[in-house]
Length: 382
Ligand SMILES: Cc1ncc(COP(=O)(O)O)c(C=O)c1O
Image (cartoon, rainbow, N blue to C red; front, side, top):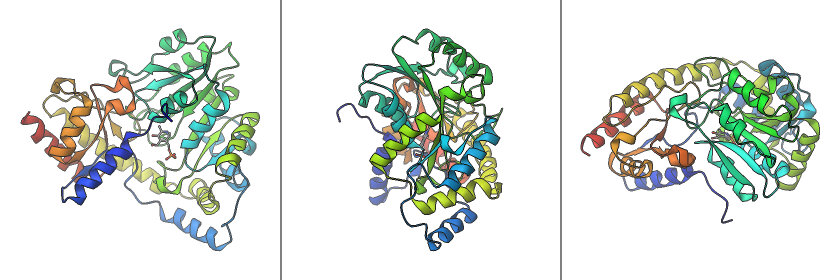
C-alpha cells in the first residue's frame, strides 16, 4: 500500500466540506465533474430498465446491447471498425486504467505517462512495481507532449504509453501530427500498447478529437478509454468502458470477474439510451462550458501574479502562478482557508505541475466570478 497514490481532489473536497460545516462559504473549483444534471431521457431509461428486471448480474464484459451500442459509437466517432467483443464495460472508466496496467505491465517494466496528468496513472504504475517514466507537458508547447521526448525515452523495457487528450488537468489537445509521431516511434514495437484516455473526447472547443487508434497499424496496439461520466454528466452512475483487441478484452474481462463481477445492470441500459438517444443536452453542456472558459481565463489573466492559457478541451484551466512566489500547495491552502475557494495545486497531477493550479470551470458563471473576485482580493493582500 506504501506505493499506491491517490486523487487529492477527493481530499480537498473533504476539507472544503468540513470548512462549510463550520459555516464558511466555499466556492468549489476542485472536483472534476459537470455541475449539470444527467439528461432526463437517460434517467428515465434507467428507471424503465429497473422495472423491466435489469436488477441482476449481467455478463462480466457488459450487456450485449450496450457493447453493440459502444462498438457502433466508437466506429462512427473514431472511424475505425470496432466489434462488440472488443468492448469491456466497467463501473466508471477508471478501472480501465487499473486493469490495463495490471493485465499488461510486469514489475520492473516501464510505462511512459503524461505529467502533469490524471494521478491514477502514476499511482497504479508504482503500485504494480513498474517504473513510471513521466512525459513532461510544458506550457510553452501549449501542454502538448513532445513526441521526440517519447521517442528518446522508449527502451527495451517499455510496455505502455499513456496519453490523454483533451487532457486533465491542462486542457491540452494533441494534434494528428503529434499522434502520428508517437505511432511512428513504436512502429517496430508490437509489444508496446498505448492507453489512450479519451474520456473528454466530446468536450472540445477548438479543433477536432483525433484518436491514435485511427492511424495505420495502431488499432491493434491501442486501448481506448472512454465513458459516460463527463459527456453525459453521469459521474455518480459509474459507467465507462475500454475498447481494445479481443484477446486483451478477454483478460480485462477476467479482471472484471475477479473484482466487480459486472457493472450495474440498469445503468448499462441507461448507457444505451445515452449513446443512441438525443445528443442535444450533451452538446448544450459543451456550449455552456465554452462560455465559462472565456470568463475564467479572462478573470485569471487580470489577477496579480497569475497568467492563464486558454484550454482547448475538458473543463479545467491550469494557470501559471509562479509570479506569486508561492508553491502550488501553499497557494491551494491559502485560497481554501482565506479566500474560500477550493482549487488544486498542479502538483496533485505530478511533479511537472509545480508552479500551476488547477481550477475546474464546471460551476456557474456566478460562482466563477465570485471565486475570481475572492482570489484577486486575497492575492492583492499578499
Ligand atoms: C483523465 C481522466 N481519466 C479517467 C477519469 C475517470 O472517469 P470515471 O469517473 O468514468 O471513472 C477521469 C475522471 O476524473 C479523468 O479525468
